[in-house]
Image (cartoon, rainbow, N blue to C red):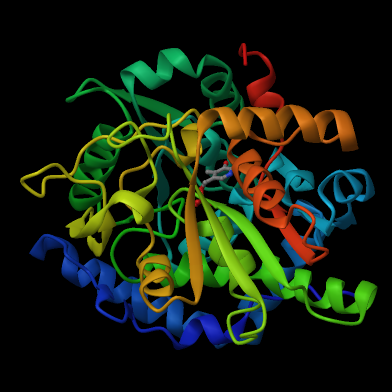
Length: 391
Ligand SMILES: *Cc1c(COP(=O)(O)O)cnc(C)c1O
């Protein structure tokens, strides 16, 4: 019996990860975020909060997600590879784990509505889904250009009852949607800001890490059940870092397990990349201190990746810490390498992953070649959204 549960050790963090993390926010938000941090700490100590979260993960999301021995891929690579199937979750990715957790918290806090921002629409759809389930109004801020580019996800969000608010600010993409959502949050303190990745000011990385840690908790039990031992290595794609920290958190104390993160490498050259840990510098960006892609003056620059979910110039502060302390290793994976892995896995296993997840698959194929290792690769999401485009 695989137990579905978050990892309580993720509650020990108090917002800093070595020199990274913290809360670099306008003074008007200090009280709101402190209240949120205190409330999260007290709720997660309560058995009934955790029980409600776990019950919805099981019966609504469909957890535990399968850990699948990919025999054809394994034979092709020359290592024994298991896939952690987050693509099988309701709505098709790991993002729903976090949305359910944060919206449960919002309801208990007495919030009047959920606000979220989204780029490609994946987080927006997960947020709108969980908001519909838990019966709370939801506003999704989205750059006007993204609203046009992601018409299908916009329709899904509206069908789910969310209000999609296009923003005409700046470059009309994700960063501007964040600014618009933050502005709304400051003016409407009874709203709850639902953040979609392992980034932003404290307590967001702590909350997101806790809710996503179910992935690693399950994977650890599953591999022990199937193989009677821990894996030699584990792999995940890294955008903001939430699916990766979800898997990694189950194995951080197991120093014999080598940890690998696959970043969106773009065309393989700086600055046409989203590989923040590989090419960035420690900087304060969007509320937290972590690595960030910057120009010669230290100013954040836009990232570039074929995968919308990896296309972010910042990164989780905990991944910055894991990199500096050498507990985890991060590599850029190019657009082309990801496309090749996306096609290969479809043919070999009948599994079409999200192009984001294909970065982790590509890295595993490269590093595990003829190594005869036992490995777990996190398949963060399904690839239906990517099929339409020419690759
Ligand atoms: C959003 C997304 C990612 C990247 O976000 P993380 O916070 O780094 O996990 C990866 N895969 C899929 C399928 C996504 O939707």
